[in-house]
Image (cartoon, rainbow, N blue to C red; front, side):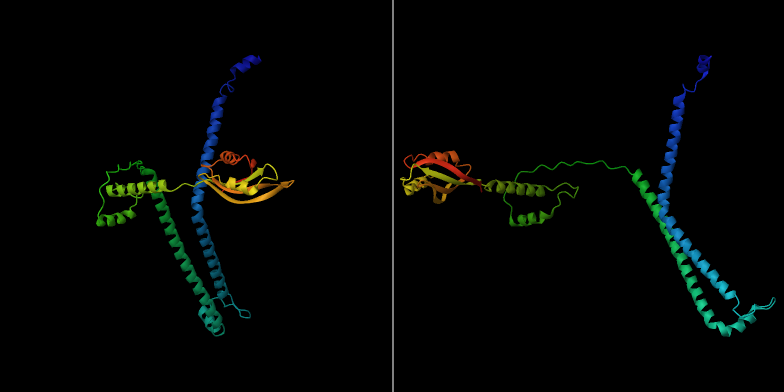
Length: 304
């Protein structure tokens, strides 16, 4: 019984159709909400100005209505005019007493009316400006979407011609005038003379840079030269050490430092060029004086 009932039911077999319909429904809702928010942002600026102007006009109308009520209401202790009595007599009788107040109220009413006229004019100007701005924006959007983008053009630099002979003074003056040529801001073909001048200046700059001497790396070395015993002639030892001459070697100051048991070592300073003199060669040359030198140690080594 249950199997036959489920066999006739088709809703689960068509479930994908209901899922697609639900998905399409929510997509339509989201698109409508996006369009409404876009239109609302465009109308926010104009609607805010119009609301402020309408509120100002409403306040002016209320103030004018209040003034009319004050002018038409009877004063305290004064009976209202009888029916059928002309208003001109009443105004004529009350004019001597309230002339100052009426003139002040009339001046205020006139100023308010003048302000109302100015506000109306401002509203009209704003509306016309907003309409012009909207039409201009729509025109720009249409032109931006309809105008095709020009294809990018890649221009190769012109080949440099052969170098001409030495230029005359007049030609040198023309070369000075060509210094202001804009090589990147113009789409016109470069003049052959401007190309030649640029190549010549690049060549001169490369030659000048190649002739510039490079930085020479130097080091300051402090050597400890130890004798055999306390009977070694230290003056003769220092003379032997300073007799070592090499290209890139410069001897400096020296002093005798006590070691112990009456023995003193020679501490001497020298400056060497790293590419020409190495510490191994320097130690080997000093230790050749076997009668005076026992050993050579490097006490300090600093780059200059």
